[in-house]
Image 1 (tube, each protein chain N blue to C red):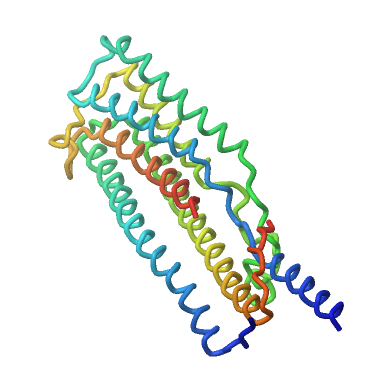
Image 2: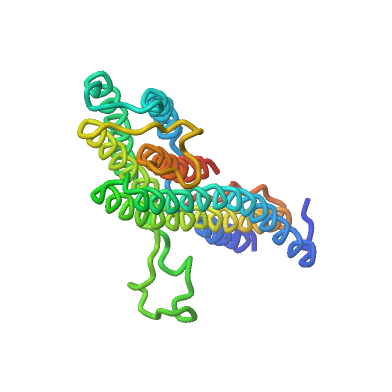
Length: 117
Length: 177
């Protein structure tokens, strides 16, 4: 049995598939960013207070400043990595919706698309 | 006619099949299990030093330090050995529309970000161990690690560790898609 593709419904299905993934991932990234930003701000404040009190040795102060730079860079790269995963999921979900629509239109249950890197 | 329909289906299947992508490494449960196991041991270490420690007692903690540094170093090696799929060059960015126009200047992910997270984390634990051996560490209980703490050395080590660990675990968990 075949059913013609309803383009308007297909557009809606594509948007819904993408929105569901983006909405979930954005919520996760927001919570993660808040936690990490707070921790890095705390780190900066402690470097300052330890330096002002003279309790943090100059060597350790320099170490923690370099370390904070690494933490900031790593955080940015983690966000980039999370974004790439989201893009992958959205892309594949959209392809899945299209695949399903084509399969129904031609009356054949198409196998799931294989991943290609 | 039937042959034509079959050919069309095949072309469609091949076309759509080629459309799916893998842009990030596959989820590896053993990495997440390893991170959590090493973290449990590291939290035990932080609890051990939380009241403040002196170099005189460093010998009682040295094996703990070496164990956690060794565990995280092993995870770092595991992450570096894991293959990362190369993104299709035309997939992520429209290089004609977005600056810079030279595609070599556009940074894409060539390795999992968790590798650098674990590397930084190992450096942090190693520096903490060496500091403990040399001058000891001041208290780092929640009562000590507050805003304006006069000697936040141990708090800084623990907080840095947590930032790196959270980065690594969040990314590795997100790979479970």
